[in-house]
Image (cartoon, rainbow, N blue to C red; front, side):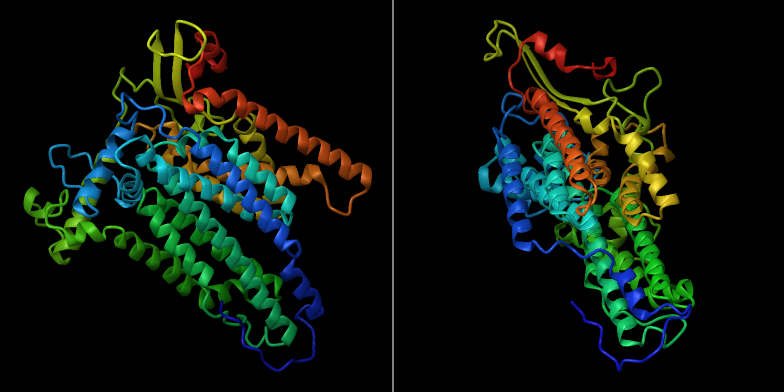
Length: 518
């Protein structure tokens, strides 16, 4: 971590006559809790519990030993990568329409455990477990409360979307992991910038120029670019967070310079921070994305490795051969995605549009078997199913939580809600640009951690400040405890259709609360 170089202290006050110590306190804000060791143990215990829950009977169910639902696309491609050294080459299939990184990660599990449910789902379960760890730490940083960080971790464990996606050989849980990790880096970068400016204010050289000081190399912002490049290497929708988090860091920089009393904070950001931000988040993310294609570049037989020659496309001749082929291949795939429209009068039975995602109004049935061949429910006729469904005790609160967050952001200038809303919005709003396209609820997987962080912030208001009176704090703790218990109970109720346990037809019908769930 680069430290701000000290300079001789100067006497004086800020431009508005405010003592530098006041500005320093405003920059630093509420300190992190001092219980670092306890927080570490809390994080590890919750993450371990979540890992056990994610791994429980991970290899079940399968379709007669083969993948289920969209696993049928990605699991065989991951197996091809394992055979070939990191790339797909099945021209007959010709449905390689996503970048390679998630499939390479799945191939690790297949290498370790074989071509079976455990093998192709292992790394997804690890990714889902790491999301628990990250959300605990991020929530603790946002709220300055180890208790609320722990509650956020419990909510992640009990979310049906994150749980089932952690048990599927699909792409979205990996993207959610890298997006959440990038968000954590954005928050750490914000705190680091404000600490450096506080040092400059304390030592009296923050106002050497009207633009404020240079802040040195920002490793956390660099890490944001690296992680967002990896997120885009999972799915191209990762670029939405590249734009969103890039703008968020700029907004944080303007706010920090204004708090430090810089005379011209906007100009200071444009002169001091914009170019490094474009490099760290823009250029680095592109380079990291290209690096995920390393095996494709090194091969001669990967899918569409020589797209220009195969298609006879002589455009972009100014680019080097391999890069030209990748760009043309990418444009072809993007055309496939943008033109993947819902057929008139014949929609996919589980298709959904983005306005249904916040409350999970149209979940997805991944696997369903019924009849006498299914045993274990205590009757002759059993149902075995897995359904992607957000835990209603959380997802049905999405609209009020988002509304409260907007109010806090606009009328209370609460940066925490602003940050969470940016992360959530980047995963939701771009899908409204092409509503004719086929869309599915699993696209909302990266929304879940940001919804949980928003709920955790609301729970922090309900809990009250640590210095609040005994009655206020006790009442708040009771409300938060009851809500957390409700979420856990809701998750336990949904458990059979999240892991594919045999249940009776009556229980199956009882799980389907809304007509749109059928």
